[in-house]
Image (cartoon, rainbow, N blue to C red):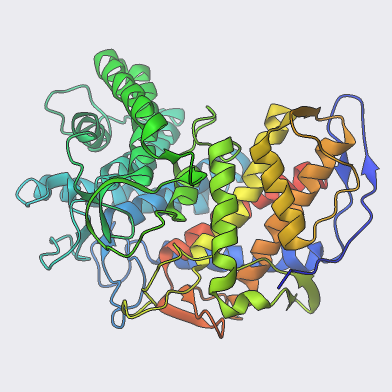
Length: 500
């Protein structure tokens, strides 16, 4: 079924020195209202899952669900993703809102998380997997049951989350030695993780992916390790630890060189999620996975290395959208009523096409995921931000394929014709129309999330592929994080396309 989209005339307002802006579709007000309302709910529930009642201060519950499934655990990666978002909120709160009460809450959450993380670092030395241990009880004791470990993305994600906090503390003139010192061996939280990543990123090719199902070398893991080392090098140099900074930079460059040839498959036309598979699920044959999309969102820097606008990422996103279309019954729905206004919705997206985990067990089939669909909305918003920052759009064959999918799948109409191997600058009508249409589709993904979110704002891990109702873990922290991140980038994109 092809999605039907209402077409609107796009009146342009252009100035000689800035990009044109366009008038928003009539349903945008209703969608924006839902996004903002849900954003408040998501922020509140995300924060309540940090240091929740019944857990050690600083522990981050993956979800409030304690049975069928039991997600009442602290995952190092998931916690890092969450506190990375909180760190962004803190910096925005202190510099924009000057809301000291809110800043105090965010500071306390980050401080507790840092203290808990240091405790885990110290106690992990006696565990089988060391800093590669991925899952802990909510009191900080190790998880001792059977699990797919080690997971090498956790230390890198934790470092990234706290580097952002360290920059906030430095801006406030605070002492950050408990977070980063120049000692060897170090006793500081961030440097412990950075030293571990620098020394071990290429020594373990039998670690587990973020879904904890496949062993090998993983795109997501390499991307977050690279980001941690690049940002760690900058922090180390700033704090006078130049030797460490040089070492982190060198290892980041080695990762870049390794990744340039390891994951891209020209014949398949997309980035493979795992290379050198050594174990785990044997039915994941496509090696096409939404965690590649998530890697671009969580780890992409403004350096064109597998960033949202890179040709290889665009081609992978096109493949992801096309492969999920026939898998879920709810993808037959092309519109929804949000805040009493009818608006178009996108396809719902899942983890990977062979997925059999339904939120309870692996008897299959798998379902669409809230955090992945929110992630695709964010991907579109970030494309707008990136192209606007570049002030040009170079229409490669990959960009053309992405834009063509907007038309083929979502009936997006281009009044102007784009041409391959042509570059459009920010003062052109074509540039503005591309940004406008990407915004429309990004909002379709956001509207899809709205369609399947409870009236009270409660989010689940998954949506039933046929009914659309929430399924699996309830109050999944990552689902809330994905929405708040997408909402933040939506606001930036909205101001670019429609003007604030």
